[in-house]
Length: 238
Image (cartoon, rainbow, N blue to C red; front, side, top):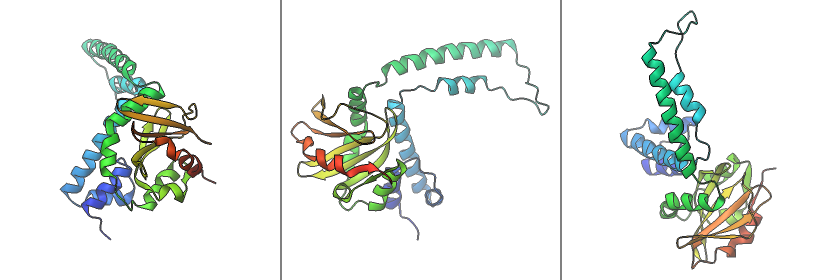
C-alpha cells in the first residue's frame, strides 16, 4: 500500500533520519517526498548541532588529513603549501570547535531551555489526537523501554531526540492542563521533583528506574500533576 505525503511527514516527524526500506522507498515516490525528507533531516541536524555536547574534533581532523593512498598503498605526495594550509585549517577548526563547545549546554537547566526553545512549540503544533500507537511503541522500544497505556493513550506526538547523554524521546501529552511536553532521557540522572524555570516555562524533573524525564509546560500549568502518570508508565523492556 502506497504512502501519501501526509503519512510520510508523520513518519519523518517521529524519526527524521529513518533509513528503513519502507521510508527510502516512499522517499523515491516523488519530489514532494524528497523535499519533505530533506527538510526533516536539516531540522533534526540543526537540533542535534545545538545540543551536541561533544564536538567531533577527531572526525574534523580526519577529514582534513585524509590523504588517499595509491593502488600500491603509498601515500600520494603533496606540495608543502598543502601541509601549511592543512595546519592552518586544523588550528582554525580546533579554535572554532572549542568556542562552539563552550556555548553548548552542559547542564540539565541549559539543555532543557535550549531544547524546548528550539522545537518545543513546533512539536506542540504538530500534536494530534489519535496519534499512531505503533509509532509510540516503536520509539520507546528503540530506547529499550516500554510505555504504559495510561500514558500512551494521551500521547499526541513523539519523536526521537538528542539528550545530554545520548538519544531520548520527546513527546507531547494531552492533559487536564492542556498539551504538555515530556522529554525522556534514558542516560541522565536528575534530582527528583526539582523544578527548573526558563522564560515563561517550567520543567518538573522526575527520576525514573532508567534515566529520567522532564515534564515541561507553561508557568500556569500544573505540570507536576502528571508526575505519577509518567513515573509509573515509562519502564524498562522485559
